Length: 257
Image 1 (cartoon, rainbow, N blue to C red):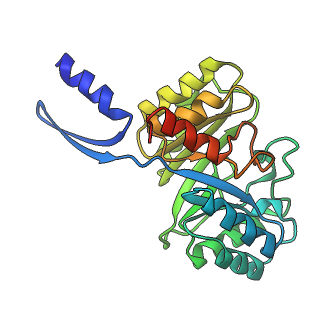
Image 2 (image 1 turned 45 degrees about the vertical axis):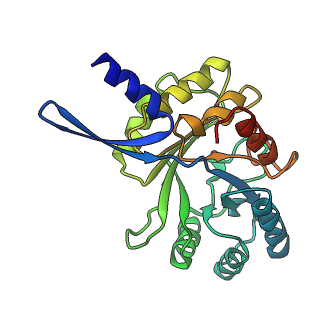
């Protein structure tokens, strides 16, 4: 029994497990976890967004996060035109102002009705992922193929009841959960990595800030659905993001890929 538990611990980091118990028999279905990197691109103007998105893809991004909440003059036509210029797959993000982070320059300042309608345009267009903030959820229909990322951001701390917040998000039945919290100590990174080890469903987990490096470097190898990296220094959309070339080099050096 102890050997089985040890084996489960070893494979847990690099595989997602589907575990079914029938009487005393455990059936384990292991699915290899890809170590994916999403690079955020701030949307201001169509041409510049296209340039930045293509550069991010060429730099090794697996997914482009289109941060539409940085553009303060949005129309449905503009959203469709910009999405057509971005390499897929795409995360569509139009973050509520309270979730964008202090002094980030991001955060949608229109009404919640407008925000939801713009998100609906992205769903109709067929984006692969859409970010929806926990506590500020947009009401969205179910008749789409887009994976909904239910996200939680805390720019002050990594809460003591982190797992309780996670369980509440799990109860909402999203496709993917994302937790991004502020690291006030290296221990906060370890708590985030521990949560990833004990995830209940596809989960993105990372810390932010100057002390967040450990969770960003090791999150994917601990089972995070993906991690976020900047295209280059100065292009960060959140404190602590590591440039993608540095992150991939670290993974290669540590034999994590």
